[in-house]
Image (cartoon, rainbow, N blue to C red; front, side, top):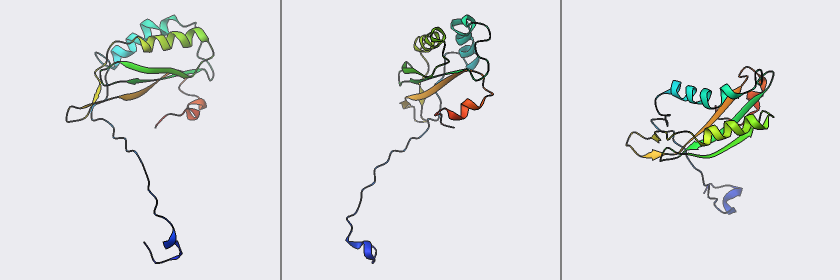
Amino acid sequence: MPENKLKHNDPKTLEFTIHVDPDYDATFPGDSESLETYLKQVAIDKFPLNLYTGYALTAISFTIDTSGQVTGAKTFWPCGHSEVDSLLLSTIQNMPTWAPATYANGSKIAQDYVLLVGNMNNCVLGMLPLER
């Protein structure tokens, strides 16, 4: 303890968590183009024309667990069109099994994702609670 007026204070304990990114991200079967094709065929092609104009945006968060399954999917920024929001959520929840994220030693880890659909050139993106 330092020799000052604070020496009579009790020592404090600090607890913290360190999150280390995996060496290999979780991957959709095939490649990123396969994921885009899946989303387009199952959901996006079914949207009304001109749905995402102006500030319209949908954000869905989900986790790929250690077995490659989608868990915890939820819409946290709805576009306001309930059928579209439901279709996107269902599309994410029913995705095929991914290859889970792994560290270099081969151990698997759950990885979080956010799917954004809509106008990516608007100021609303800065308001979303996304890690950058």
